[in-house]
Length: 117
Length: 114
Image (cartoon, rainbow over all chains, first blue to last red; front, top):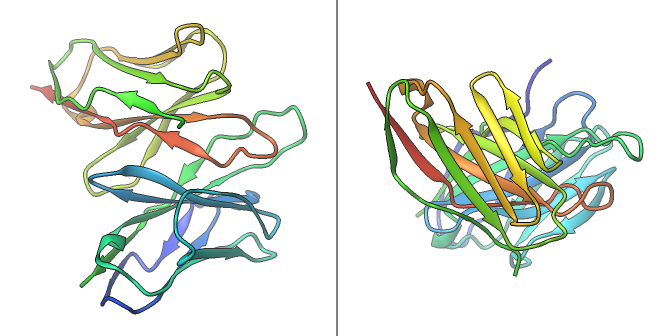
């Protein structure tokens, strides 16, 4: 079974621009979460989507947004980029099973390395 | 503020030794616990999940959970140079309605010397 894929893998932008990152979850996985990883802050949760709905959101400004499509693929968008947005952006998927079945294990994609100049 | 704390290391062990990695968490409501391994420049790779108090073994890896002490650990037996990586402890408050929110520690860097 193919893993989580993310595109693009590397991105260089300038301040003020906007960027869209894409994530395709493992086949059959309907929950997609996004994380930002920086050397100083570590891995921080951005948001989670399930069945095209944002189910949970981390403590990030409104410049960070996302969406999920009917095929479970997800995109995240960062508008008005700042230097501090330079980071590795990771997408993770998990299988949402029947109630009572523990399925919260998350599998990560390779990430998108965003550099803001 | 929900927090996960790990010793940043580096933790250095000789090849063949046991490496012990520790993690504490602040929220008593935490339900699920995970250990991920991350090589430099790569994404986190799941090593093990644990949900109940006690030990869980998988090959050379043993995870230990003590919910009363809010403590999770990972033991790596017969450590190999290929185990050299950063180990991330992650905690999830629950599952079902909000299962996609993992809180990560900042990781412990492990170095296994040949």
